[in-house]
Length: 172
Length: 435
View: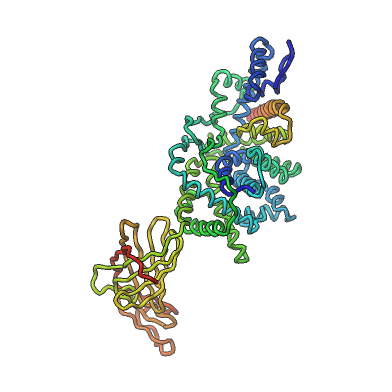
């Protein structure tokens, strides 16, 4: 069993990146924090964790997957689109904040367009996980992580640019 | 690993792996040599750099996320109990509580408390060292451990409106972009930064009890920490007392964890949370039985019906929080019970428990002794009292109570009658008499 002291060390080392990973993944900080806590609770029950960081991110990723199934994700996308539409139609008190909100909404839409594995790999990489850790967390071969990441990055940017062009066209 | 023959080009994944530093040294050298001499692969590499930088910026833009944006479907799904979506969407904050969704059990609550205690104890040990190495650059949201230079947050000054071309420019024109990205990723503390016991430690009842005390302390100091700890969905109004206790036990753990995380705007929150948690945990440490002399320079001073000086004997208990106490008259030898409350700000309050009397003492921080004020008075219970602020009490048994006198306040079942003016008192520690 993971000792409380070890858990404390794990918490200090990985809570911040784990919450950020989950926040980026889910788009909701509260939710991310809750899942992060659940991840650590599960760690405490674990007899032994060989590769801690990849284990934690894998559990967090699985928690997200368990909770957000495909149909629900579609609903979330609609919700985000609705939020974006509301933001665009609202009175603009602070242009800078609004632009940031729109950029964030575009980024959210773009990231949601990725395949789940690509998205997880990219977000884990952005949290500093190495290729071996990503491979372990996602059940991939190490050799395929580069391909997965290159695909994720390319598709993310293509989706993002496409959404930006749509927005620009709407404004024009 | 890339082991290709002459004339064979690395694929895009290999180039990304190379740029990510994921190739072994030999493969990296081969890729680098190939890219240097291959125009097509050089272009592919430049594009990959742009994609890496651009993707990082897009991902980073996700960080500015407010809380409470969870879609309704998620709330209903995580509830997991088949609750109607509409009901979940309209649920109150309490209904959307983590503990409902995560199905908190006493064991989980105890685990959460253990996390707090373990973390707090660790922090207490190495806090001084930690303060010297924790850097929170302005505008940045993560804790950085070690002596690394402050990271630069990815600029969010504009959209990536020119797409890959712009990203290429960024990546190639500013080679530090990648370094900034990797620096922005919080790294684990260096080995040895966190003292870790190797021997297994059981989840003893003592730790759980300490966790419960921590919860109480966190409650007591909530006013101080409220602006530091971002309060999520509070678990209030639990039906069963035991359930409420368990939930309350776990809720501060979540708050503390949340405050430790604070991945966005509040850059000081993690430090504040560490401080709050560390202070709270240190407050859990038990205070031994201690005794004090409550004195006043005013002649004939009494507190309650006890003439000063009084001996205040505080039972063992948490150093910060509530402890029971005994107040003994030095002159008369009579005793009364009291409550000793030390707040997180080091101030102390003493409340007298004596039938027919009310008394409070408010004392400031400890400076070899504590100074403050004491007030007390009689309590007329179950009597109908007719009181004027500037007149002595006239209380009569209810059965014989006449009509209220002119200018009298409405009758009450209990009325506190304070003494004319608070006493200026001091509290100095003394040796405890044997029990």
